[in-house]
Image (cartoon, rainbow, N blue to C red; front, side):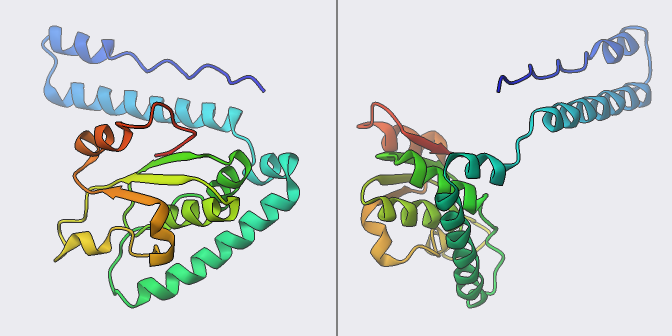
Length: 193
């Protein structure tokens, strides 16, 4: 289906008028907050009007593959919960694993790129799906949690050694990592941000 256009951002004219008329900072702040609330409500309404149920969308394309993706995501969550319990730290969570697994299996990318690894929920889901496909490579960009001691050890913590052969990770932040990761890839088949 065709996507509806995004709502136009609320104008800042009211705030500018208050400033030029000598209005106080409190007036400007209140008007900016009201504009922000209006923008948030308009954005939420737009999203609701164009949203598609993920399960229905995937099932329409390949019901068996969707069921396999959901099963893989359930196993992924159980594995991650057990493995991360040993760490005793909150390393964040992953994206929508059933959808990510489905997309990698369905699209069969040769070249996949992700930004943001953290513990490696999504990295592991992509790598498992690539392995199930029998082909494909993942390159990932991350910037470790420097609040932790030895933070690099937690980047991709959930990814087993046997999955790392088709995976390249850079940990200097996107601005530095992406040019290196993409230097010899003229195209991408999948981007996970």
